[in-house]
Image 1 (cartoon, rainbow, N blue to C red):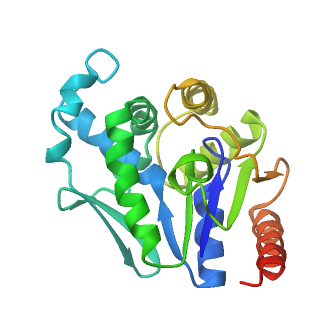
Image 2 (image 1 turned 135 degrees about the horizontal axis):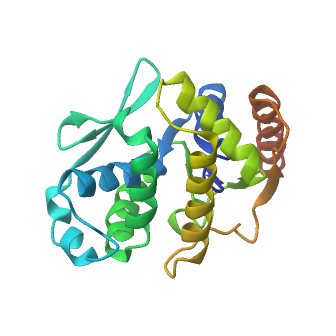
Length: 225
């Protein structure tokens, strides 16, 4: 069974999807982490993907990504190194959005994501899971909230990780990613036609998890899964 959760940056997709994967005993796949890892690779090698995307395309075969589950936590490895924490800083967020608009990058990662989903029950979150990666997913959810609400959540998360930033910087980063993700020519961010739209503005994390849990249970019962 495949559950797709899409939505803009900071909507809580990853945190909620992880929790739901534990509830339903599904494998969680964070597609955004893959793009962040590619963005980190570009930064590490001083590749300006906005000015010269071909420089990254030429290096795609040098990028090896591995996803492992350790202590019930998904960890992502870039060429053998665990970069799970490195990829969460604002600079890498911008880089991830920039590499995600490159069709060759998306094609490489989508192939890997589809292979993972074909082998097991999955909850996959990202920007275009229900519209492009898993268009036949059994359940599609588009998770959203106001940009101010999303920025406040991300800012609190970064403070917990002791990342030095400001709310204003996170808000601008969020607005930039929204525009970039929604306006890209290839597989832009948008709800699938058959997606359930869920706005979590003002919700606590627990309220959002419980809301989606009930939606998924109802949908599973309707489809007899």
